[in-house]
Image 1 (cartoon, chains in turn cyan, red):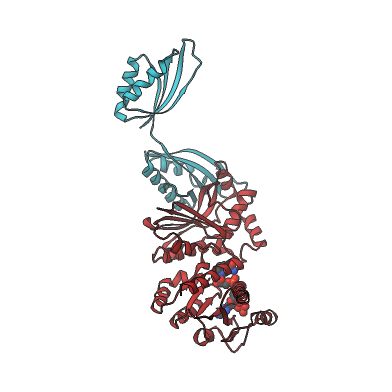
Image 2: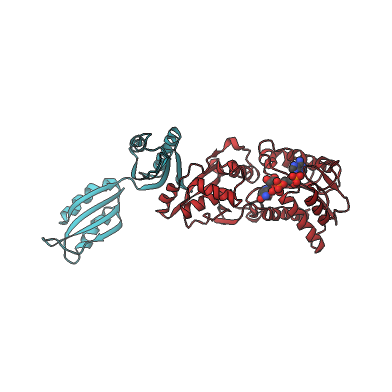
Length: 166
Length: 332
Ligand SMILES: NC(=O)c1ccc[n+]([C@@H]2O[C@H](COP(=O)([O-])OP(=O)(O)OC[C@H]3O[C@@H](n4cnc5c(N)ncnc54)[C@H](OP(=O)(O)O)[C@@H]3O)[C@@H](O)[C@H]2O)c1
């Protein structure tokens, strides 16, 4: 599972490495580290890390970090790692846009996380760009398939990327 | 093969005239031993077993509208004129595929090779015609039916033999590609771009078969049935055209450095045969401009291959037909 964490550590040499060692020890794979250099009033600096780690290792890792005097300010589990950007064209608003989005969101494994709609001047069809995120490639394909069904019901044109998951 | 090859050409439109002119020039340049022994149009036919004077015949056609004797017809050529190769370039009827299929069938049964640019007979009756050709030990070739000047059938049959084709993606209709290019580059609406395509002669007076995706789908059917040895028809395909694509949609995709093109798609293992607008990165090799065609093959050995060329036009179609004729001569 992908996890993003914001940690707070004392701004002293060697502390960043000290924070990263427990992550590796817990079997975590560090994907990005962003190190802020300006300390706050108490002399602590923030570090953002994104790691890939087995879910059952998260709790032990939290304990291990705390033991080493590192404060976890925020920990977010990122479930929706797979994304696809698609286009929908049709009478999106008059056909209950909320329902269209909910059909994906209600799955529990996928969400429409971003939408831009261009409205035509007259009563023509509108065009929207949607970002669909899902927990895995199969889930993403299922989510796009759901959109395909909605498109058929509501007479939309769904345009997907060439060679994409769907 | 015999030293002098007789060719009969059915149809003297832009393509038929291109073919007879090219073969005539090649014979005069001594680069070919083909003579044209018969030609026909919708109202007449001309049969000369020792070779027609092409310049004189075309001048007469230009002046009078007919190429030969009104008492003779294409059927007289097919059934009784002497020819080794029949070039069938009469109009396409994708619903009935006639009379072209009847002509091709009769020619194969007589033991003549056939070269055609006519999509109807190949899309609808390939298996029957190929079986007939095999039975009579002759060739049936149709390079001109798909992607104009791009020798895609030859490439698939010969040049990358041994590869497994995992997917084929193609821009197979120049009219749609022209319209989408103009919408994307100039922000034209669909009706504006269609109107422009009509004015410039990229779209037919009735562009319906192009814009609703049928023309591209027919080419997918031809590729599926010939190269991939399937047995599908238009009814087995999912076909979506470009009529619903908006200029807004193209602007939205442009924001991510992507664009929209009408793609014909074959994924043999998944039995996917589809024509639909799809989103592509602007840097994708299939994103060609104007009325060009392009085909990307995803193969196991050769990797990705993309071919780009003019998809239609009388010269490009002539090129494909003449290369089919010489392929037959060289392999015969
Ligand atoms: N042009 C292209 O870019 C292109 C590209 C790919 C494939 N093709 C295909 O190639 C073929 C020829 O195209 P084209 O552009 O040359 O068409 P075209 O300009 O419309 O010419 C058609 C020709 O066929 C003749 N014809 C009509 N009915 C006939 C019949 N029953 N028997 C014999 N001849 C007959 C016409 O006679 P008249 O002269 O008396 O009218 C005319 O000479 C079509 O099947 C087309 O779909 C064309």
